[in-house]
Image 1 (cartoon, rainbow, N blue to C red):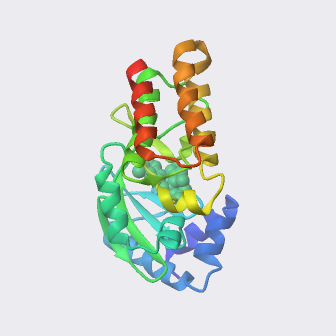
Image 2: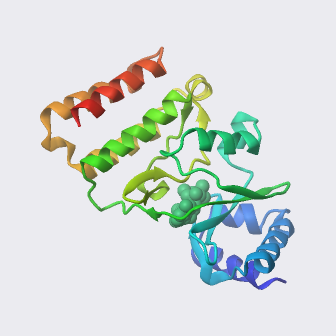
Amino acid sequence: MGQLYQDVKLSIKKNKKNSLNSKFILAKSTSEFEGICTKLETTYGLNINHLLGMGTSCITFKKPDSDEVIKICSRNIKYLKYKKTSLIEFVKESRAMEPYILPVNEMIMDTQSYFVYTQFACQPLNKKKPIDRNQYNNIFLIIRSLFSNGLLVGQLRPKNMGYINDRIVLFDYHSMHYLKDRINNKKKWWHSLIGSIDCYNRLFGLDKYKSLSKIVNQFTDYVKTNRSFDQNKACQLIDDILKEL
Ligand SMILES: Nc1ncnc2c1ncn2[C@@H]1O[C@H](COP(=O)(O)OP(=O)(O)O)[C@@H](O)[C@H]1O
Ligand SMILES: [Mg+2]
């Protein structure tokens, strides 16, 4: 058994990453995952010390001698499940939203149950560290970029965002949806997005700014209550926020 596979398996267990355990270790495809680990070991010299982070569907390593990370991701992600689309689209969409989204640099492997890609390394946000005006502005630019491309990522929490040259970018868009599909299929499609915005309102201290609060609330109210949601109208409301900032 390859060393990296063994060490990652142990790390998943130790850190009680149940979702990763079922997708990478308990699944029938675990031998496929083992093959990927072996290939990364021999090609890039990866070992367990390069492990950077583990989410619910992806394991991230620092790529040796580079400013990139290597991400092994399960194909069992919302983007591929609901959109019935291909990885080519995934890469294309990530690049269309640059610089607000940290795009896929290179798709290095594509197997039946997993895919492996590189991305620039960034510094993930700290969910307790306050953000300034510029960074708060960045959050709305990311949401605007998603909406204007007809896309939605609800999970915009700090764990999925990072700093790159002082700018905030979204690095995890494995749960990306087509906005129209999501609105049609889920009544409270906005729930996770609004929760994420609330989180940044607190980190920014929005309640200190009366007139800005009013404009931000106009946007969130529109998103929550409007049955015939129009993405252009939502973008206009974001522009009002950006002007006030
Ligand atoms: N570009 C990156 N730079 C630095 N760390 C990253 C990067 N991408 C992912 N990570 C780390 O890996 C973890 C899992 O990756 P993520 O893309 O969030 O996948 P998941 O869909 O499993 O949540 C993140 O929480 C973060 O700690
Ligand atoms: Mg994540």
